[in-house]
Image (cartoon, rainbow, N blue to C red; front, top):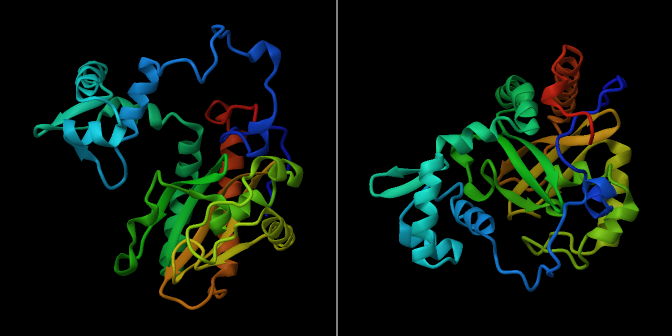
Length: 293
C-alpha cells in the first residue's frame, strides 16, 4: 500500500531513527555553558510537568491532585495555574482545573491532526464493517501515540485512550511503523531488554528485528496478548512517499488469536487513507503537511 511518488513529503513527526541523528549546525540552539544535569528545571519545564498531569482518565483535577501528580510544591502549582489561566492554557472547573481551550486550539494545528481528519470517515466505515475497535496512531521515539479510537462499547478499555502512549514493540501499530525504520537505527536506539506490558511482550531487540522483517515483507503486523491478556490486534502502515507516517489497526478483546477475516478490509482502508492524504497534498494543502520530514 503506497502512494504514488509526488515529490511532496508530509511531516507527521520525526521517524524513530532520525531522533538519534545530529541536527544541522545552523539549527543547533544557543545554550548556556551549564550541563543539563546541573541546570535547575526551568519555569517552562515546570509548566509542562503541570500540564502533563492531566490525562485521558484525569481530565479535571484539584490543586492538591495536580501537585501530587506533577511532583511540584503546592505553592509552585498555585503560581503556575494563575499564569496558565491568564494564557487560556488552563481553566477553572467547579473548584478544580481543566485543560483550557487554547491548548485545544494549538493541538488542532498539528500536522497529525490533518492526518486524523483525512482518516476519520474511512476509520468510521471500517468500524461499521468489522464491528471491531479501530485505531489510528503515529510513532514517537520508542512509543506509539494514539490519535483516534473507535470502540465497541461492550469491550471498551481505558488502557489505550486517545493521546495515550504504549511501547511500540508491544503493539501491532508500533510494529507496522517500526518495520519501515532503518534496522541499524533501531539497534542503536531501542533499549535492550525492552520494556514489557505482559509476559508475552517482546523484550529482545534481535527477536523484534526478525519479526519486523516479516512485517515489512507481508505489509501487516499482528500481536496477541502483548499489550494485555486477551487483546488481539492487526495493523497496517500508512505509507507516504516511502515512509510510514502512521498506522491503523483493528482489535478485539477476549479472543484467542488474531482474527484474519478482516485483513482485506483493513488493507483497503489503509490505501484509502493514504490516497486521502496524498490528494490533500496535491490540492494545495502542503502547508498542512510541512515538506521536511
